[in-house]
Image 1 (spheres, rainbow over the protein chains, first blue to last red):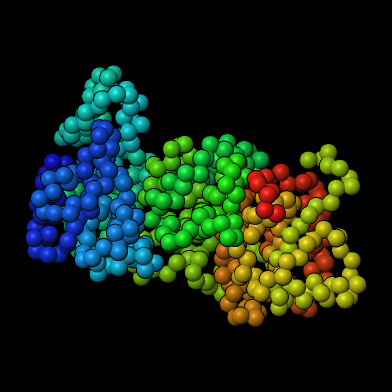
Image 2 (image 1 turned 45 degrees about the vertical axis):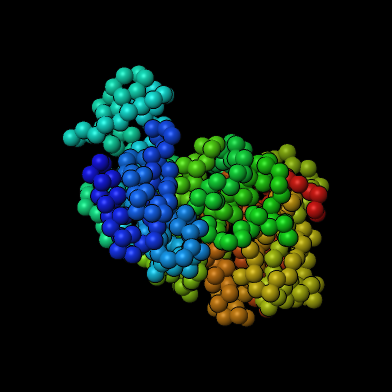
Length: 318
Length: 147
C-alpha cells in the first residue's frame, strides 16, 4: 500500500513536470478511517496528499466528466472499475480521451467498512497489512482476516480488477478476476412469486428518499439534463412516496440498461442501504441472455445493446 | 384475487403505431368486430416512439394494463423503429416482472393494418386476463395535481 502511494505521488509529480497532465485526480485520506475521498491535485507540490489504501472506493469517472470544461489535460489514477467507467463516458462522448492521461492501478479489491465494524466493533479502527491478509484493531480487539473476508461484495464479483485502456499501469498485483456466477442473488429473487417480489421491492424502495445520490455518482448516468430534473414536462412528481420511488428506479435502470459497469457506486452512495445492484444485475443478466454476451466499459468503441438491434433478436411478443 | 367486483372492467392504455396497429384498430371498427370497450388508444408515430416512461406512468396514473402495438418486425414504416422497440420492451417486460408486476398487465403485440381481427382478439384476451387479476394496485399513486 505504502509503496503504491509513494509510486503514485512520484508519478503524478513527474507527469505534471513533463507537461503530460496539468492536474491529477486521485484519492486522499479523509476524516475517518473508512474514508478515502477523491482529491484534485492542482500543483506538483500537493502530490503528498495522494494516497492509495483499501478505501479508495470512489469511482473517479464522474468527477472526471465534471472536469471536462477545464483547460489542458487531466491525469487520473484508475482502478479496474474507474477505467471501465471512463471508457463508458468516452464512448458516450462525455469525456474527450485526448484530454485525459490514465494511470492504472491493479486493484486488490476494496474494503467494506460495515464488514470490518461487524468483526471489530464500531469505533476507531486501524488496519495493518500482513503477509497474507490484514490485521484489524478495533474496540472489540484484534482480528486477523484475509482481504476477501472484509472486501466489498462488488469486488468479490469483479471480473476486471486490472484497469483496461490506460496510458500506463503502475506495478502491482491485482486480485484474481471472478469467473463464477455473478447473478446468483438475481436468480434467488426470480424464483419468488410476483407478489413476494413486489413486496420485497416495495419494502426496499419505500425507504428511498430520492436524494438522487445513486444517479449523481453513476458513470452510466451522464445526461447533462436529467429527465428527473425536468419540470416541463413533469416526468415524476416531487413527493417521495412508494410509487414515485418505484417509477424513479425502474426508469433509471432502463436508462442505464446495457451501460452499467457494476462499479457498485449506486449502492455505496445510497444513504438508505437499498440493494440497487440487484436491479442493475437483473438488467445486465437479461441483456446478456437476450442480446448475446456483453460487458459495458471494456471498449470505448463498443456498440450499446439498446442502441442497436439484430433482425433475428428473440421475439416473445407474437 | 377471486373477490373482484363482477361489474368491474379493466382500463387498458394502448399505444398504437400510426401505420399498422392504429389502422388495424380502425379496420376492426370498420368491420364491426366487437371487443370489450376497455382500451383507450393513444396514437403514436411508431412503436419506437413509446418511451418506457409512458408505460410506467400509465400504471402510476391508474391503468390496469398497458398494450404497446406496432408493425410486425421487418414491416416498420421507418424500416427499423420496431426492432429497437422489441429490444427495449423485451428488457422492460422482464424488469417489470422482477419488480413484481404481473406479466399479463404489460404486453407488446405486432398487429398489421390488415389484422383487424387480431386487434379485437388481443384486446379481448388482454381484458380477460386482467379481469382475472383484478384492479392494479402496484405502482399506483403519487401526485394527481397536474392531471
